[in-house]
Image (tube, rainbow, N blue to C red):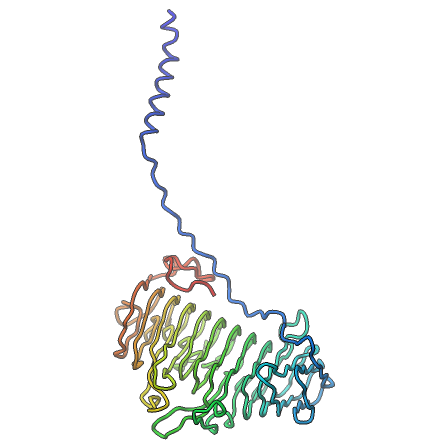
Length: 440
């Protein structure tokens, strides 16, 4: 009776031990590791607070808040570490001329309040000058141009070491910032630093419905011309939007440019020209830019190297999304730019870019790269493409129209739709580790 009474308890205990042993003998299934795409922060065009005013600055307070203002270095006799503060108000025009500061101690022209310009700002013979609207807390753009019938900024003569910073432009009918003949095709380059323009920068500016930034010059062995050469140009942390101007930034004879951390949105919705948003002839780098909802190549790089040794141009870490026409980038070279004793071909690297929804009009190729003859070689890797359009087989996502030698081609990924390529169409974080932009 006692045994009979304990049997149910014994059976339960044995069952428990059996199940426990069974579980212990089973190797747990490895969970599939979840690949979490990094959150890509949106590119910032918000400038940092100013830190360039010297502690021992000498201040010059100019302007009355209206009329036409002239800032003339010849009559004002600026000393070392000079800072001009322009009184807030609405000016008809501003002329800045005869500034010859040094690279280590540039003349600073800043806003003292909000400075509006109704017609134009002209510069003439200005060297080592910074024009910056960053001098008032909580006012990002201290100099503003709005509803300008012609050009907003016209630049004449020498202009080494010039920086344009924290300025907004809205509704500018002509060129928004332009060089004239005196630093363009009427400024011949003879190989010396004095015969070129150096260290020109446009940073932390806002362009809303404007014409292009445009600086001319030409390298052409056919007519023995080498003019308007710019060296060490930087276009960075700017925003461009709401225009049909076609090309928005153009330098037609430039060495060592650096175009980075710009945003472009809603551009060329009614423009059908074959343009590049950025159009650069020479050599340099294009990186960490974000372009959405536009028409044209993000950049047309027409390549050549200064001197006899080929340099390498680079296109990397850019986002290009939703264009009506053409592919992400263009590389091309022309025989006229191969000027013996002055220039030679360039090599190229295109890597870590994310390019999607190209050429929605489907009337041309919409791939990552429009590749013509470069004269040199191409390295092409870690690029991510999705929703591209082609009349050919998409393949490596290069619309190859030349015989450039591709010496590196690896780890490029294509997906037919964005869902399998990126996290979303806002941050565009790649679903392929190590492929595509790493963040802008």
